[in-house]
Figure 1 (cartoon, rainbow, N blue to C red):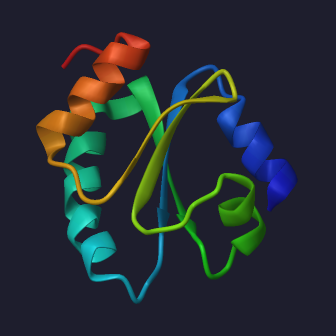
Figure 2: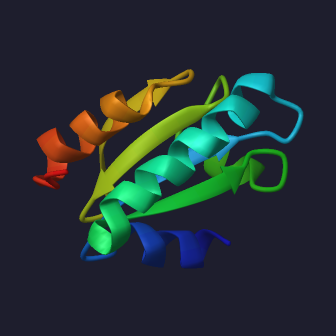
Length: 103
């Protein structure tokens, strides 16, 4: 998973990674919000979900201590991170600020 994850975050597009757990209530609440964001931004950015229980190495590497935690990668580098549930407008604003994705 690690090498494919590196390939994903090195994408030409910005990549929003959602570190989540299946047992996490707030993570479940974030899912439909991220689907709405994806619908709105289309192919302008990637949204990737990482289950911390199945990918503990990645969670440790990026110091994910609570879920959900979202990290925005630009050219493979983390440019923004936030734990907790954000609203669609807040996520869209972050994408716009860090990558110029206008919606």
